[in-house]
Length: 121
Length: 111
Image 1 (cartoon, each protein chain N blue to C red):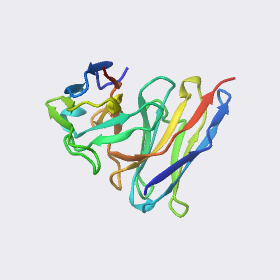
Image 2 (image 1 turned 180 degrees about the vertical axis):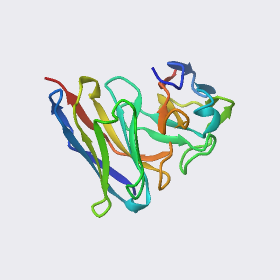
Image 3 (image 1 turned 135 degrees about the vertical axis):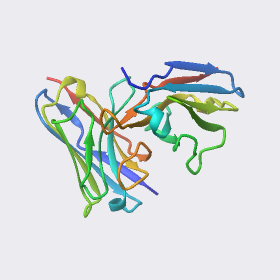
């Protein structure tokens, strides 16, 4: 059974950094692309970034490009999101999600429970 | 403001059928598959439809997807109170950037 567990959320001041992690189990992590998707309070889903199974191909939403970095450690079945220069509009629940394929698609077959990030002074 | 346009809300009675539209353009829906996600209150989204019209294992055939040109549609028949949720369409943006696009979401109320 696929399980994705996010960690690292919390309250952070504007301009500071925060690192989210997602620990995967129940599937062969190294075979699948992985995504981060966020949802601001009371708002819809916003895709953040995707990383291919081997870490060689990554894409970002324009809203986070240059500030966020997606990475993975296949030896530890872990996906990371390093967030810097955080702004108030980055406040959201951040979901880790598994792609249907090894590269990147819009088919996110499994999702974690989410980690809340609040950017506030 | 999402690039993919969905109605904010739809409603229907139990047992009835409802459709949710998702309108895009030639750079996204027009040239890519579409997926649909269901988000029940307080939970993470779940994949309902992929490849425009395919259902993952475990998704009942009451849920269906289709596409025509630059618009896609999610259909739900035999509505149940447990179907009350937010529904999101998604596709891939291939021209302007390599991004996953989500629609703004549609709140389904089963009266």
